[in-house]
Amino acid sequence: MLKGLALTPPAIGRIAIGKVVEKNGKRLPEKDDEFTITSQVQLKDGWVLHPVDEVLRKDSSAKLRSIPVRLLFGDPDLSLRAKYTLFERTTGRPLCVGDGESCRRVTSSGMQSLPCPAPHACSLAVAGACKPYGRLHVRIDAGDSTGNEVGCDELGSFVFRTTGFNSIRTLLARLHYFHAVSGGLLATLPLELRLRGKSTTMSHRAPIYYVDLTTRTGSTLAQAMAQAKELHEARLAAGMDQAALDEAARLGLARGDFEETEEEGAAVVDEFYAQDDPPPTDPPHSEANGSAAALPRPGLSSRLGRKLAQSAQGVQSAAPEHG
Image 1 (cartoon, helix red, strand yellow):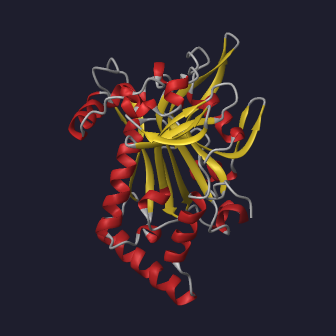
Image 2 (cartoon, rainbow, N blue to C red):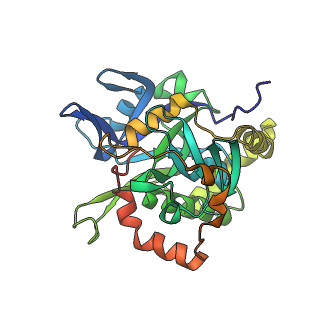
Image 3 (tube, rainbow, N blue to C red):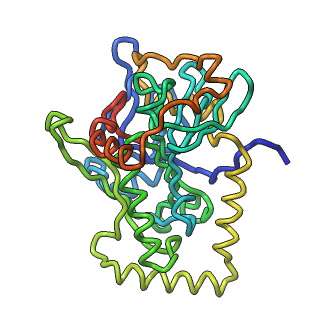
């Protein structure tokens, strides 16, 4: 088996709340106020829509602002994985991935594990070069009318990518809350991705769109939990081992230093980094050899305070919050 290759959840499509457009010869991210569900095929004019997009809209002129979903995993941290991430702009190669305490970084001495002071206190994270980057994998529950690709692939997923702090914080909170209140039955809960908007003084009262995870429209939490228990028992009777699936995913993700390949990273850079942003500079030799450990690290309360104060700004930093 190949070494150093992270085994990520198989994706059969994408969920986005924005797109990349060409303006004055530059490819720039553009925000949107609805979901778009695409395949993994990108042509000159953009990503090809997935058939499930049309099924969920029912009316081609309708805005798609909610998607019925289920999760693949019972562990919240497997369904949504979020880290501070620095990409090399020209190749899309991941350079540094951290969680605010420690990071894995490509240096002149090879791959190293170093302290992670978070972007606001890191000398490499200039001009928004390092952002919180999250990937949420879900199954879209659209019924049999969507065709075999969606209806039959129970281990395939649609991935929602975001660098928006509002989406990441909200989704993480919801996942952990649903996991706790359902007694660990997160993988069988019928849920719904929902697009929400808000405005702040820092956004100049312009709407900021982010993604939330709720019970489905018309369903209470108690009803959702009853359905989750029923499906969980049916899966047990069929011999499905959710705990073993979670462990296989956990081990697969741990196999590689970074989850994204250069090819995937190039698509992320294209979607979330404007072309006129300054590229990250190479780390100085002293930092590459580990002197990043000498950077001052703020306390937890200070870091949380900065995040809360900059939450709206973080969503609209170098690119709008979208998938």
